[in-house]
Image 1 (tube, one colour):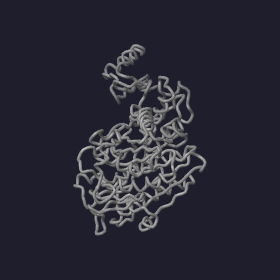
Image 2 (tube, one colour):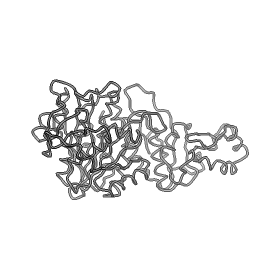
Image 3 (cartoon, helix red, strand yellow):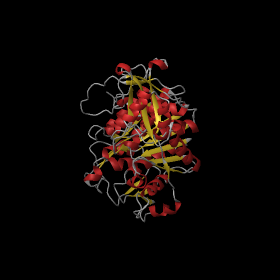
Amino acid sequence: MSLMSSSSETVGIGDPNAVLDPLARAASTAVPIWLLQESEVATWRTAQSPAVAAWADVHQFRGERHRVLVLPGPAGAMTGVVAGLGAGPGTGSLSPWQVAGLAEKLPPGVYRFAQELSGDAATQAVFGWVLGATRPATAASRPAAPTRARLVPPSGADVAGAEREARACAQARDLINLPANSLGPAELAEAVRAVAATHDADCRVLVGEGLLAENYPMVHAVGRAASREPRLIDLRWGDERHPKVTLVGKGVCFDSGGLDIKPSAGMALMKKDMGGAAVALGLAALLMERRAPIRLRLLVPAVENAIGGDAYRPGDVLRSRRGLSVEVNNTDAEGRLVLADALAEACSESPALLLDFATLTGAARVALGPDLPAAFSNDAELLAAAQRCGDAVHDPVWPMPLWDGYDEELSSRVADLSNVAASSFAGAIFGALFLRRFVTAGTPWAHFDLYGWNPRERPGRPLGGEAHCLRMAHRLIRERIG
């Protein structure tokens, strides 16, 4: 089975365990679901029969976020469901996470939303319903999927688009969740090849010494100590006449920190250090599946940052693909090194849009927490658009400055620049400023420093890998290019 096959129990229209109803049955045959803010419960209650109102009172339903109450009818049948949205937002700007837990909580049957939803809200609801019913792939044995609660998609929803996005997010999550012994650079390359084969794309992989032969010296330096050889994965798809969109994803399949070794607590989740590559690959698959009118390129430097006799060292000076020399002052700042070579190659084709995704700095998490990726760009309009698109699809990012005043702190006495600053402040900004040195002036570029992980269980967002920025970037590309 391919690593990028739909190993999650993702299901859609026409599948045996479908979570969407293929017949779009008449409203009278589907159980209505009222989506209610706390402020709407009293009005809803007055419109119900005395028996239903009393039932809601007995169960003290107040519209609390994620609270679900099944309404009984004669002979034990369901007459409806009320689902709490909390204090807001309401159905006008519905978040998929307000709907994501419903398919798992409801008894088997066919359901519909009682309120009319706008096009965007309807699409977000379908996405949340489908992704919330998707079980992550794990190495553990799992029972067979139960009969599902199915949804009649609301009118105006882009059902196919919502299913595509749910599938892409689930696949990215599954890659991130794989343990490092199952997903090294070679396996990550195979995952990209599988996606390329599905969509008739070209995929070329440079391995080991081939990286030096074709001038990717920093990718090679970071990965050379590992028993699993480093790689540069290069996927191309689409009509050459279309605008060029290039995605770059950090593919550090495990990060020990190198000779600047991490403590055990800091190493515990380092299987997810390829989260940027998983997001970029999921996004690439999504763009190809919908036949986006772009010329797509995906670049993934895939390495393991290991300790060995051939490990690169603090104080080493590395030559980069762009020709700049880099003094290594911390081997645990390896992601920016491999991304730098990939970004330099990406810029050689002058793409209309260049986006990179990386689990780059702990500083971004300290500043913004696990759910809010930091966004940087050399184009103020592009940065604003990324935030707007993220807000629209409830996949948020937060704009951060490429503060020129800090740039000189990346200086080195023995090289063109250092891979880290001497200062312990503004780590996310320094990481982005380093990457900017390898982006050609005038190339519209955005860098997303993401966590790629859900640290706690929530409806639709299980503990484990998360595809931060994927839907935001898809919306951004669709608005900006097509």
